[in-house]
Amino acid sequence: MNRLISLILLVAGCKFGSPTPAGDDTSDPSSDAQLDLCEGVPVEGVCQDSMVARCVDGAIEHETCALGCGVTTGVAACNALDCSTVGPLGRCDGELLARCDTLPGVTADCSATGQQCGYVDDVSGYQCVDGGILASKRIAGTIRWEDRPLSPGQLGAAVAMPARGVMVAILDAADVTLATVSTADDGTYVAHYEATENVRVVAYSRSRAEARPARVRDTQGYLHALGSEPFVAGDTTAVDLTITASSSLGGAWNALDNAITAMDWLRARGISTISPVFMYWQLGSATGSYYQGGDNSLHLDGDDGFDDVVALHELGHYMQDEYSASDNPGGAHDGSPADPRLAWGEGGATWFAIAIRGSANYIDYSAGGGWSVELEDRVHAASVAGGLSQRLSEWMVAELMYDVGDAAGGDDDAMTATHAEVFDVLTGYMTSSQMSARGFSGVDLVEFLDGWFATHGLASCTAMRSLLVDHYKFPYDFSGPAGDCP
Image 1 (spheres, rainbow, N blue to C red):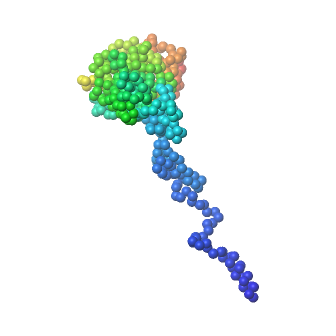
Image 2: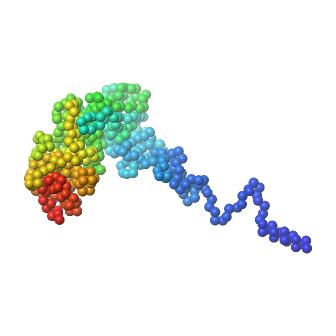
Image 3: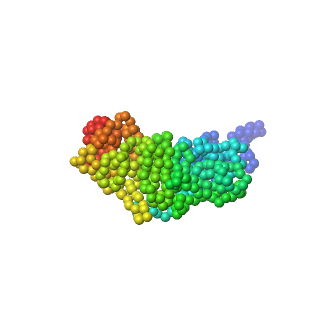
């Protein structure tokens, strides 16, 4: 009997389990339960200082962010590099290198590999550089210029802008150049130099990047420049400069910024090699504003320093001269019907200006108030009975080209193309052996229309017919090299 009782107790002990270990008052987890190793971190991630923490396959993974962490629509991620602040030659922020040679841009902590962030040359720009290569003294800062935003009839109050891609030099007391760098697109620069005496920082109205070969000179041929007060080499590590709108230099930096804008626009639309442009402006000069082909020189009148549309219009002639076709005979023009070649040359240059700005207003400010022409709703029509060779208004050419390339609906035209597609005609068909002069002898609006259909096909015939014939009263025959429109 005693043996039977012992056996029963033994079986009962096996059935109901062993005593709970000391300090553990929870039951064992079931075999299919998942351990929460992420400790509440979701798969969407959370920001932890400059890192992103995510739950991946049941475990926490961390990603270190060079530009900090942010949350968008509930998902945590490293902040993307804003390439609009970098430019073609990169940027140094301390030892953090930013490059936007391809998109998206990339960053690198140069110090993580024992290197320094510095400017190599005008081709390589800012790079991570091995220790001992850069000069021992370092200076950094920001170059700014003051804009006067343009609106019909007036210039606005001064607004500080970053001096994008401008040349910055470190000079010694004898004006010997110790270092030359370029600013990034946020206006910042970093330069390394060697010196023991006084030095100063000087900003020039020139871009040294191959992608932006522009410079602005005074009427004597000298670059505009603004320099700092001298300081003892090595004693100062930061120098900022601001070119004020009220100074005699302000218009030069506005002109340079417009050239950079135009060159960036060209590169974004497939122009890989940018030709140099030489701009001339001086406060108080009375040269008039014009482009001079052959040497790529562009002259701005003294009161056109802040006239963005005027500067971009003249840069439009530079675009035609370098990358498209125009045999503009030149001469005075005021928007009234003129030689079709002049209308094409001037109207095409105006299209370039307003397409870049995204605003169909030609504005020319002067001390007396200036003038402006609205080029979206106003129509400078041709004559239905005038034929293909008729005299045309340059405003009509600009209006038509803008209507073709802007979004449909603004003025009730049905064209749904883009300005990039307009530009494709200018740099493709109009520079090819396929182009033939129809209508007036020379390059004019008819060649552009022929090129439109040769480049983009006949699908837009109905919309283009409505725009040309009904809206602008131009009797195009819709029978160019691409064939007859249905």
